[in-house]
Length: 108
Image (cartoon, rainbow, N blue to C red):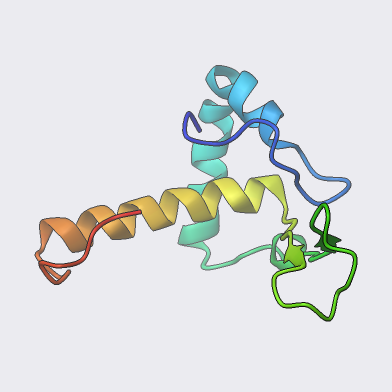
């Protein structure tokens, strides 16, 4: 939770990153069992699967037909974002520990 950017947007109606970063001490005792149960039951809530991707025009780029004139912003559920971030970090750590990545591969 410390790595989350607190003001990054999430999907409307879901907890924002600021909630997770500012209240992490209070939330971790509840999030751990919640995520463990999701893994044990092999379930992923349908609401966590939903994302919204608005297209935003970049400043000074008036024409959408020009490549690079817009950017896509993916808005997802805050709880799903935390779980996916943790799983990604675990997978990267295991891959590095087991030597599964090529030598020329750098994290990031």
